[in-house]
Image (cartoon, rainbow, N blue to C red; front, side, top):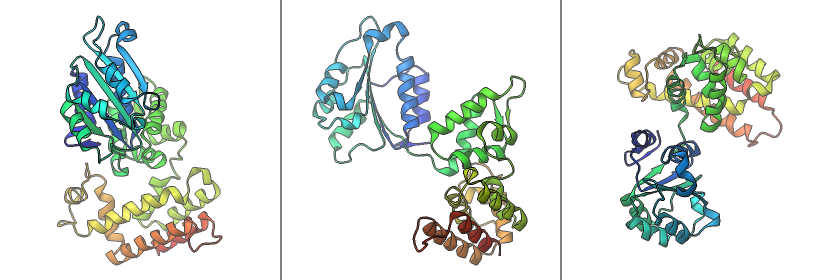
Amino acid sequence: MAETKNVTFTSIMRELEAGKYRPVYYLHGDESYFIDKICDYIAEHALAPEERDFNQTIFFGSDVTASQVADAARRYPMMAERQVVIVKEAQNIKQTDALEKYMKQPLKSTVLVMCHKNGKLDGRKREYKKAIEQAGVIFESMKLKDSRLPEFIEDYLNKREVSIDQKSTQLIADHIGSDLSRLTSELDKVLISLPANDRRVTPQVVEDQIGVSKDFNGFELKDAIVNRNVFKANQIVKYFDKNPKAGSIYSFLPLLFNYFQNLMIAYYAPQKNSKESIAQWLEMKSSWGAIDYMTGMRNYTAVKVLQIIGKIREIDAKSKGLDNPNTPPGELMKELIFFILH
């Protein structure tokens, strides 16, 4: 997942679950989910419940100075092995000299957690960054790429002893996207709905609990396009035109662009007839998705794929109002699908 110099979410959580705590954690980046998970774990497990009143302090960066945080971090724990100091919105602490000084000699009995969301540590503060790295861990939490969402969904459910098929995984990924906080919230809702004697997520479960039609969705649209099924593709587009809340051009353009962009790359694979080779060439975790690219290469020439990529860019610009005074999204979607399939 997100990482900086071999420091990953998984490696940090593995250490924490083994009971190993570093003196300093600086958590920054655009994906708040991983920052929250690390911070919440430390808050809930570093101290016993009865130790927290005297040994756990939570600050907000806009309400404190670096000196106040450093002073709190230098306190010794009371009747406990350690104390925990958490700073939320740490990016709002402007003058960091006092913290930099503390980082150079951190207290081993303190776990200082700095949470800096929706941004990164100022690259110009090199000495501050160096001091943090020497004291503990800097973790950059980056947005998960769309191609990694199915893997995330499968891992999340498998750890809770729930299985999910490939179609259901893609339905959820396409519908919710890379907002991991929302994604895990929807997955938790699905988990609660499953009976004790059937811990499987199916397309019907996804439709019932998340509201994605199992027959008319981005997964089925892409499948129709990959297989050049004109009738099915037009059925789905008409459904979306009549049910705009079910899906729109804005959600499907990235899905189609990603597929055809990868299809263009697949043409350069050394072994186009091997799904394992295609999967490796496209850096896919499993080879099942490579079948779509092998099918795509049979149904579309490389020249046509280049033209389609150009058309998707054109439609994307029009959907944002460029050179398009009044064509509605539904008509743009029909125009694109017709161009792809003919």
